[in-house]
Amino acid sequence: SDLLAAITKGVEPYPIPERKKYQYGTAGFRMKANAGLDHVIYTVGLIAAARSKKRNATIGVMITASHNPADDNGVKLVDPMGDMLEQSWEGLATTLANTPNDKLAKAYEDLVNETLVDEIRQLHERPAKVVFARDTRASGPYLVTALKAALDAVNVEYTDYGLLTTPQLHYMVRCINTLNSPYAFGEPSEKGYYEKMAHAFKTIMHGRTIQGHITVDCANGVGAPKLKELIKYLPSGKEGGIDIKVVNDDVVRPEALNLECGADYVKTKQRAPPNFNAQPGDRCCSLDGDADRLVYYYTDESKTFHLLDGDRIATLGAVFLADMTRVAGVDQKLKIGIVQTAYANGAATEYVEKVLKLPVTITPTGVKHLHHAAARYDIGVYFEANGHGTVLFSDNAIKAIKEAVPKSPGQKHALESLCACIDLINQAVGDAISDMLFAEVVLAHKSWTLENWRNTYIDLPNRLVAVAVNDRSIFKATDAERRLESPKGAQEEIDRCCQMYVKGRAFARASGTEDVVRVYAEAHSKTEAEKLAAQVAEVIK
Ligand code: 16G
Ligand code: ZN
Image (cartoon, rainbow, N blue to C red; front, side, top):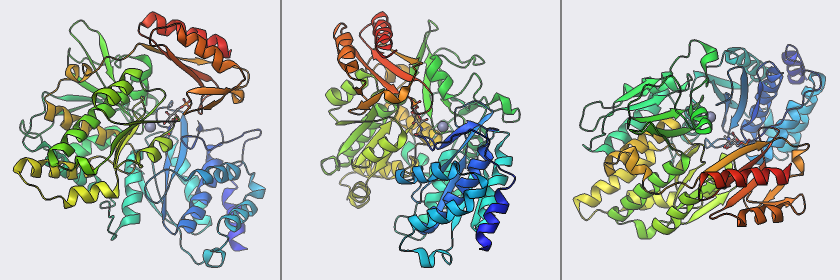
């Protein structure tokens, strides 16, 4: 048919390089931008079209490689509610990406036949709609050409949003698909995104004061121009305002992206970007290359660096939301919980359970797992230690908060603040810019410095190592990746190692993004945590 011929013709400039194998992983497809990613993106266009028809809704495509080096790029799909692509479709995307050009049209037809069994007759009439955006990488515009070629071949209507942060694209998708519904998320435009956030920020601030300024390292990525735009919408005075200093905002030199800066650099190197000249005690934070990860940090008087990572942001948010629901008088109706991965520091987990007295759920690594677990609470706070995360409010929570009748001015303000939190915190996906504003208002409410925040509990010393192994696929983990069920006997050995240390805890899991096994270990002293990590690394070598 014409359609199939158009697919074959459209993909001609994008052949699959020989002996390449692609996989839709935890964060979509990711690789060197010149390693056949154009072919992959063309196939993603087809998947997006099929998915849009299947769900009868707008689907998003984001071209980014997040915190990875500047010459990498990648692509991920966004489902109708602004969440990540449903897991069962990851395999379909993988199959199509690995299909050579001469078989692609047929593969697309098969895919459509299999996934749209009942809808098949309406399929060709049913319109599809796709929206997409990219980060600041130099390869972005070329890859957009490949995406458009696929969408044109299958006659899909699309909107090119140009440059956006990943969470902004998720926001657009959710807005478009909920327009004129009782679950309307906002106006599907950049302006709509900024206005929603700024309005919520003003409501929660309610005349409180944010101490000093906050320095935001934007990883020389798309977060820089977007944050600068948001600043125009935010109040700036001493009372109720915020003073944001944007640094590492060079999006003109593409090679500067994520280079010695950004959330991943700060988290893995445990130090501030070298070009920083912050003063002791200054509040600093870093975003990653597509602005969906956030970490805070400061240096004290003795020049010691202190990191406040995703675990800390989660506990900060949970303390605030637990307090607010109590003041608002809705705490009895709402179950608040925190979702972490095995990488969460043991001290953070203990603090949540014993001090905050809130339940903790542990899930495997990867945002989608945490997101789903958080959705089972009325207020679910989820963060990976690396800074990915957000807070989800259930329909029940939103209803309880919006319908509660305040009995005092204090209750009224608490209810208004909770309502504003629902808007300030990006409910679609973890959003570094929105998380940062949330952390800032919580610190203002508590009149906390970063040191006060850090002193809520003391992290157990820990060590993370990447171990090269022959075949990482033999390492199979269970119990939210905290235990190995294969190879046989390995877990027993790890257990024996842990028992030798006070507060010893360790686990090994195969990475989903690199060809290594990661070992995490913690113990009550730094030397012991390091020894334990080294021992466990020996076990799995
Ligand atoms: C991906 C995940 C991230 C996770 C990381 C783990 C998303 C959007 N990204 O980047 O959440 O922490 O993988 O990598 O889910 P690893 O498997 O190599 O340890
Ligand atoms: Zn990212």
